[in-house]
Length: 288
Image 1 (cartoon, rainbow, N blue to C red):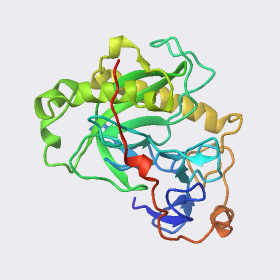
Image 2: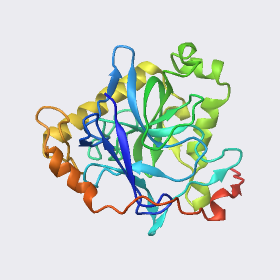
Image 3: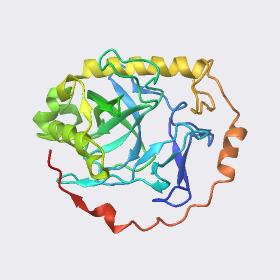
């Protein structure tokens, strides 16, 4: 199914919103309405691109806002950007989320011993094409890191756009280093150090920082999809918006297309991007 986006507000500020529509023009939730699988047999998921490679703005699906638009994360009332931690420029892959997954914050993960982070699964897409915020890529699953972020389990899937020229050569985690030498180590380093310039300690990992293989990653996807199903068809979860226009049978908070469209009515008109503060482009040299 084809999807489009409609942007509102000003990029690089907190009033920016990116909503999703299906082929019929109905507003849909990228968290709930877009299917998890593009091709389950081939282990290909739908990926919602939140952050294009090399960029710094920390964009994310809002799990709390109705119809779950993409917006910019904030800290102390200001738009949040990740720092350039030498030699990494912004995000080093297209970064985003896998729909219809959810890491339950009340469930202790047996692999990490930590509860979930209350978000959809994150995914790093390693293909050559730089994505666009709101783009939906079909991504072949390759592996997963088990990051521990502030005492929460925060899985990081690795995958590649199926249209990438090298996609046929990369089918599991061990193939990544063969075709993209150094990228697995760089990914581990990026997640370990990216918060250090903001005064936080380095992140930790389960499995000694190893990127687990595709089979393991598929198990994580299945588990978090089941957690999402239980949440969306049950009582929901505090502060999460389950508003959808037809996610699955039995989903709570289903609304009509007309009611979903009302969420766009009061959004500010799209304007030119706000200029970036020069500090966004500064380099930080991390010593561990």
